[in-house]
Amino acid sequence: MKIACLHTADSNIPIYEDAARRLGLPADVLHHHVRADLLLTAERLGGLTADIVVETADVLQRLSQDADAVILNCSTLGPASLQAATAAAAPIIRADGVLAEEAVKAGGKVIILCTVETTVRPTTELFEAAAKATGAEIEVRLIPGAWALFRAGDQPAYLASIAEAVKVAYDENPTAVAFAQASMTDATRLLPETYARPMSGPTTALAAALSKITAAGRCARNRRSRSGQPTVAWLWAAMNS
Image 1 (cartoon, rainbow, N blue to C red):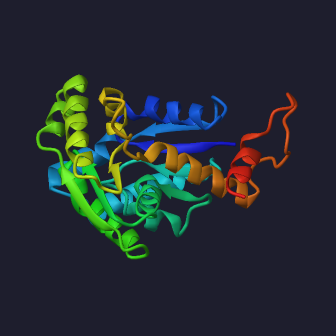
Image 2 (image 1 turned 45 degrees about the vertical axis):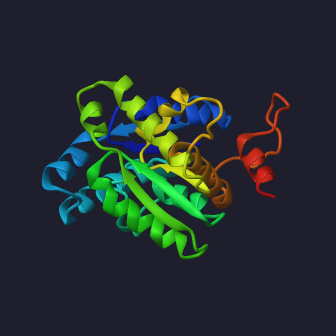
């Protein structure tokens, strides 16, 4: 089984690897590809353009030629997943898309925190579309100054600013709080135990990819591995039965 992940920052790779370990995936399942230039161009131009969508979709389609599923891990580039899916050889998973579906399931107020200005619009559109099915109230919040800290390489300050925003959000008693970007995930380590952990894209995206692969019969369906332990595919199927 092979899951290709398209990132726009190297720092997201260990976050996905950690999520994979928590899901019980073997160490060699994820194959990471980083295209920081795609996000940098979007930032320089003030948002996603048609040319960036085409280029991103092309990258996703090429990755799908040698993978069982492909995850797009960038909320700014997210809309390109739809174009890529039209001619992809494997399922294309939009990380923030599956996150949105999970976050709105219970309805109520959902606060989505983000740090990149270019992702505010696509994230808002995505979560509002998902919320139509449940009536959830959506609020997307940009954390001021956070992305400048990330770009400056000040990861501790970046994560600290996110953790403070999480506390403010949870103090309003929302139904759910979600991180729009994978780079925000490690901020949960700075939260006191009294605070819930926001939902994040890596775990939900990997779970969705695994579900797609299993449903398509792309991986072995044996209920038990040679070691006598349940296979990842069987575990996921059992969790959803």
